[in-house]
Image (cartoon, rainbow, N blue to C red; front, side, top):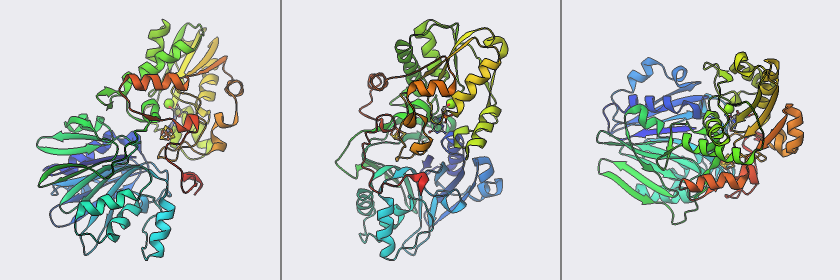
Length: 455
Ligand code: 5GP
Ligand code: SF4
Ligand code: MG
C-alpha cells in the first residue's frame, strides 16, 4: 500500500491526490482521502485506480479542508471490497478519527478477538482497524499517551498515518519494515511512503522516518518522539528489488542506483557469455544496466512493455496473470533475432513472467536465452505487507534452481546470492534488512500463524 499525509496546507486534498497518484504502483485495488478541519473529518474512497476511485465531485467536496491523509490499497489482509479501502473514518462523540496503514500486523487476529470479546464491533475485515479500537479503548486524556500505548500492543509491520480534528500522527514500527518519508511543502509538513510523492507534489524530501518513531503534526508545530525504545532496523529488501519506484530515494539514494548495484553484483556471480543484455521493463531495467556495465555486454531494449497494463503480479488467478503478461510484454524481433541473450528480471515468484519471456524470445528468433535474477531465490511468503503468496505458489519453495531452469526452459538460470544482496544494501547505509522471503529468517515472530491470503 501507499500512504500520504499533509498538515495545514490550503491545497491539502489536491496534494494528497497528486501524492497518491505517484504511489499508484504500491496499490491499485482502491484509494481514498480523509480530510480534517478543526471540527470534523470528511472522506471519500472507492475501488480501483485512484482516477476511478475518486470522482471530480468528490475531490471538489474535499477542497476546503486544510489537513488530509490518503491511501492506495494493495490487499494483503482482508478481502477486496469497499469496506476495506482506506483511509478508514470513524465517527464518535469523543471526536472523529481517520486512519491509513501500510504493512501487515502479525497479531491482529488475537487483538481483534480480545477487542470483540470486550464489546467492539469491527466494520471491516482489515487488520488495520485494530489500531482505531485500541485508541478508543484507552481512557487517557492525553492523545500521545493513548497513541503510544496502542502502538506498543501492535506487532508486525506498520507505517500509520492517523488524523483527528487537531493533529496528524505518523508512526513506524520498530523494525521499520515499510518505508516512510518526511517532507515539507511550503511551510507545511507532509509524509509519504516514497519520495516520488514529494517530487510530484513539489515537496522537499527531508529524511526517512526511523523505526519506532512517532511524529505528531498539529497547530503547535512538529513533535518528534518515539513510542518505544526498541529499534531493530529490518527494512524490506523487496522494496529495493521490486516494489518502490526507481526514482524514489532511501536515505537519499535512489532505488535506481541500488538496483543497478544489484545488477553489477549479479554480473560478478553469473559466468555466462552473450551478445546482449535485456532487462524486463520497468522494474528490472536498472539492474540490467548495472549488469551490462559490469559484464561489458551491451544493453538493448529487447522487450517492450505496454504501459496500459497494470502490475500483472496483482491479477487474481493464474490464467489471468498469464494473459496479463502476454498483453504486457513483447519482444523486439530485430533486437533479439539470432542473438545470445541474457535477460535480467528482478525476481521470480511463480515463474509466470520468466516462462513467458523465454518462450517469446525464442519465438522471436533468440539463439540462447539465459536468465539472471537480481535477487536471491524467493522461497517463503511475506507476513509483513507484500503479497508474495503461499508456499504452494512460490516456485523456488518447491523446486531447485535447475528444476526451475528446466521449467522456464532457459539455457541457464542464475540468482543473486543473499550475501551479495546484503553487501549492496550495506554499501548504501542500510542498518539492517529483512530477507525472510529468501532465507526464512523472519525478524518479527509470526504470532497468528495465518497467511494473509489464506484467511
Ligand atoms: P512471477 O511472474 O515469477 O510470478 O513474478 C515475477 C515478476 O513479478 C517479476 O517481473 C517482478 O518484477 C514481479 N514481482 C515480483 N514480486 C512481486 C510482488 O511482490 N508484487 C508484485 N506486484 N509484483 C512482483
Ligand atoms: Fe520484504 Fe521479504 Fe521481508 Fe516481506 S519477507 S518484508 S517481502 S524482505
Ligand atoms: Mg517485473
